[in-house]
Image 1 (cartoon, rainbow, N blue to C red):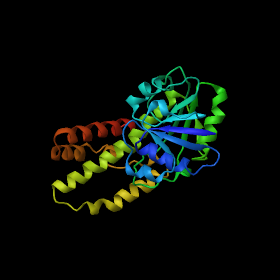
Image 2: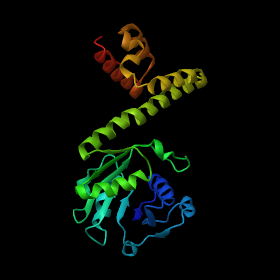
Image 3: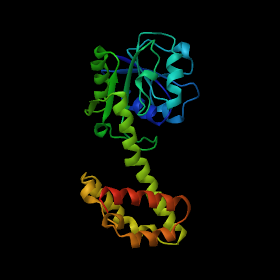
Image 4: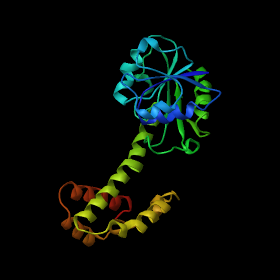
Length: 250
């Protein structure tokens, strides 16, 4: 099976790098409107910036920014091919209906400089035509054994859940780091707590694992903390504490 990848970002790079090693699904071309970053030079396939130069393939993977998916799919110079995107938040039907539509969403955070162990990454798959699902699943299995049939609505909720789990959690750690820095407190003092938080998180025992003043309903401590904060940090602390208090009936 032949594959063309469209895109030049972090996800596109890692997909191209992995797919270039496959024998069952052959990456034959990478398209990007602007020049590709130097990392792509290590991937030995044809590159093009010309839409009219796209090669015939069994699957076209659109690994581009969310807002570019619909216009890019509409500008493809052919019809009736299997065209999939890799976004967590864009519905499958945003792709042009001139094509056989699908989604191949790897649920992971990517950066070009970080090596990726694809075998641990779940792939969320959806196709408009049932007959295309096995073709897409075969492609996904070149990356990971963890393949799941997830429709567009489920995938959007899953993406929201991932933002809570990953992006919001990371932002909390950043705010904690900034709070320490502003008060000349070595952040390394919190390192063991961070490690224990991650260890407990991997046990998936989130409800029982919650600790802290809001879990205990200790409003005296909460008010003292709020007096130390201002601006958006104060609002975040208050809102999350309210959520925890409500969750545990305090």
